[in-house]
Image (cartoon, rainbow, N blue to C red; front, side):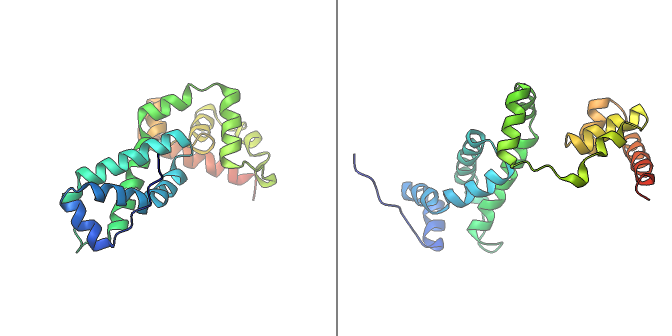
Length: 183
């Protein structure tokens, strides 16, 4: 089985081939942009297998929604990067992805995070969790979700079953309490 050479077209030729749904367009699209799009996706999704799946979804979406691309609105690459980025963010926010990550064993998860994010312990952060322990239970719980587990305010409100305004108020009060330790 011989190795095929990479296809490279000008942007105008590629756009024309994509509009015509020609086979060469898909091959050129992959050859020319797969590594760049994968780079964008992998910065958002660190799991290699999931990032590769999102890359495949990106090419499918580009192919199926190419009629919505307009050369007057911008470059082809910019349009494709936005599709890749949005699909990666959607995947990251999806319930399936969150549940998959919650179900991993703790030891595997800690090792995975350390390896993927090159975790460095910062001395200026040491002791913050101890200070958080001095807060009221409801403030501590929200701070834990938002700052230590990465939840958004809306996700924390859903998780705890309390209104978004209450989350924001308790979070602000907790931060004010913590600031007293530093002033």
